[in-house]
Each structure stands twice: as structure tokens, then as C-alpha cells.
Length: 50
Image 1: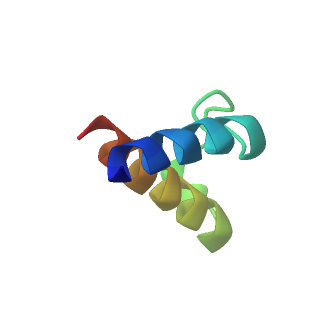
Image 2 (image 1 turned 135 degrees about the vertical axis):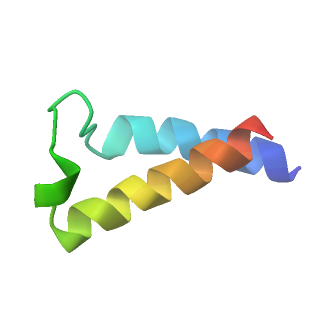
């Protein structure tokens, strides 16, 4: 059940949140909000793949 929730969250993230890799964002110049979004996306993706 946990995996299905994270898969749904991953699809929601893809639809709503910006993709910084496509924008070629430099991580050393990212703001705290951008870093939080990146961290959230990594957390959800890791749990969806488990």
C-alpha cells in the first residue's frame, strides 16, 4: 500500500512541480525552496521504486 501511495505522489509531482534537470539548474546556485523541492522529489522517487 505504501508503494502505491508513493507512485501516485510521484505522478502528482511530475505534473505539478518543476523539473530542474530540464532547466539545467546549477545546484550550487539553487535557492532553499528549490533545494527543498529537489529533496522532496528524490524522497518520493526513492520510496516509489522500493
